Length: 221
Figure 1 (cartoon, rainbow, N blue to C red):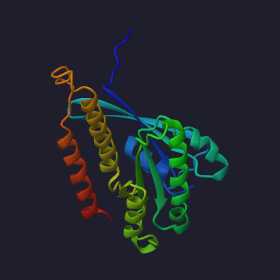
Figure 2 (cartoon, rainbow, N blue to C red):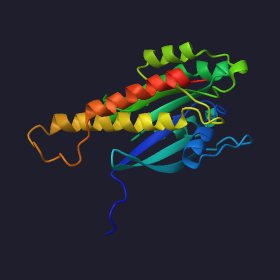
Figure 3 (cartoon, helix red, strand yellow):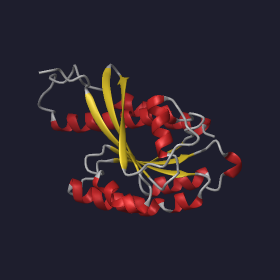
């Protein structure tokens, strides 16, 4: 039997209206490329990204979903098992932002069913195309407010200019690792010393996520 080539496997799902740049964010992160003429996703697809964090290999399965309404029922079925869900909007399109509340309510509804009322999936609000400053109609403060309301993390990104893309996904990984380690510690208090080799410092993981968010806030377009 072949040995597993990674230490952790995380499922990440990007959702939101059509043409907000979900596919471009994924393509920039996984392939470091950007296509101005990228065609809207039909149905659902995913890409794999592997990275190292504190000596551990993380395998990310990043799902790209179609924003068109006729595909929403397909998208909902993929909420199951997601470690993080990213709700993406276009800062130049007010409609993509106003639809976030509906997406968020749907997430909470379906996660409640899948997780038996234990909502342990991380939520992120992502305002994409922050390079388009002259066309901006959704202010950063508005994104921060809705993220706070729904207890989600907030980032502004530009897939075109590669702004905050890497920071976003690293933040996700550190948050998930910190959460897993916290849960593991709570359940394994009687197994002292057994998990020393594979343990993470929760404080250091949370410190990274906080500093990452601070850098994002100061450097964001």
